[in-house]
Image (cartoon, rainbow, N blue to C red; front, top):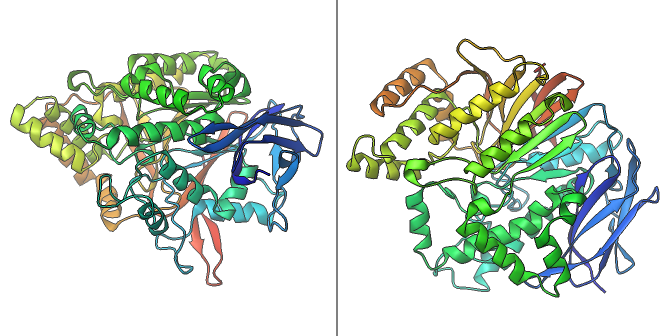
Length: 544
């Protein structure tokens, strides 16, 4: 009899259907039964000796919440016996009404040693505990996880011991993930956390990767990629990272209709073993990133979410560097501009912040100019070393893409049919802040903001705290302008100012959207004297 290895994860939901992801320890039929009679079932598919199912549940009633259970070959496996948590539910929102969008990034999942957590309380654990303590209270309608769901290059002590039992850690890539099986261990360690497991079973989630899902600095530059491809371990690492991302994260981002039209999903399900088909897909994605689209769109009533791949869709050729390849950029524009009167709020999810502290922005723009040869070959070589060492690869390191996004956002927020808000949701930089742009001679009708929230659970070194605090200062801004002049950098198409933060800690942001109003709340996980953790509100403000 098959058992439940991981999950369930409640992924896609709308007014009438949902998808629930599970991993079992053997082949079986996975079934979801809801208390209101809605249900769905499917056979598992096999990848590299692991068994998965994404169960499409139909027949749900809009505006309701119904408890559900998971069965494998007819035997109930969820909820587990004597669970300390309330029953998991599938909640469907009405076509209109309030939407609560919670988001964050960067969750290092290493379990605390001896009850002590070296990076502080986990914001997702704490959110889970709050919801479980009062299931009837307001909860997020969806949780957006904006990158670094797993850390392939920063493993825990427990995972290190497990890997050492299957290969010699003296061989590359050493104390990092090497293949698909080791990736499955990362997800198992992260999503088996009891609080996170229950949270993800009852709050729908949308996900996108960032660098640590594969490796730090993933796709930083053409030279970086050439160096990685010259190693004898990179190919297996990358293919395994893309394969595991598709299985554990990307599948659940898609609607049942999109899944039905996906030839890879059909091929994997129809084959006794889908490993070869998925591996071939990952190899094509590596050879020609423009052949695959990891970005996707979700509509929540009158809220439109565009989750943008700002890692794998890059153009790295030095004289044509772009954050998004032409096809991806065209897709983003089409999704933004299509039926603008159909949404009141536009959310652009990109793991990397668009608006950074001015000093950081100017240094990244200068570095891009140096690497492109603006000051000659010697500066180009120097610039590449700096780019890798300082992680200079955000939107500002791709100046043409930075300006193109600024132009698109301004256009989206202007004129008849403009939404009330346009929010760029990001993580990556291990702190939180709010920045608001302005365009010379032009004021969009929409309220536009960069909302950055990171980490959910990770360390925030003192150097990051000091550096980002200084980066927003007037002195830093003047220094940045001098650096930009050395690089002969054109002025950016947009100006901006920080209107909140920086805030440091394990934290999560929530946007509450009702009609054309928007409210932002930032909460940090704090440890109490009695050993419990709570989410403390750091800021609560109106955006529109």
